[in-house]
Image 1 (spheres, helix red, strand yellow):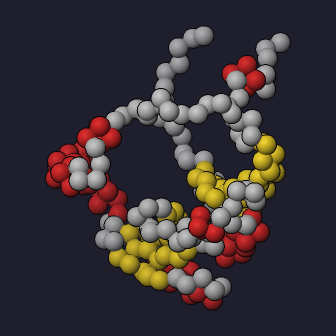
Image 2 (cartoon, rainbow, N blue to C red):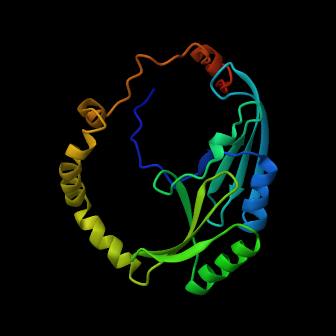
Length: 211
């Protein structure tokens, strides 16, 4: 097999999350946010494993052609999975075109029964926030007029800022984490359970064979 030069991956295809219920999630992303329901795929086996499980994989398409996706797994669902998460832990942001649009979206979302707050000025963007029915924080954001200049300035010093931050915060992190965990670049797979993974031969059997 010839060597292939790696290229930076193209645009993001999708991000995926759990959902409590596919229809409930469809209501929010299609009827509240206006995204297209692009696919509702039903499967009976976990991908890459030999575990039999019915689940649905939902895809909603955003205007830029990317997707936000969800898994509805009825036999492995727990209300604790859908407690609202802090935005620091998990959130997803979509861009709007003007402050008028941002405020109009806030009014619309509130009228649809999902509490929405903001705008909050982050200097490089202004944003409004709400939670979807699954506890995922959703942000609608508007770029500042000088957004490009701000990001260019930040990019020019990003590595230096990151280095200084790492040096400053490492002593704080060592109170709760180990040095090995902070320095790790690979993943320790020594205790991973591969017993239910499909064999390479099984996976290869699904690939097209050359004629």
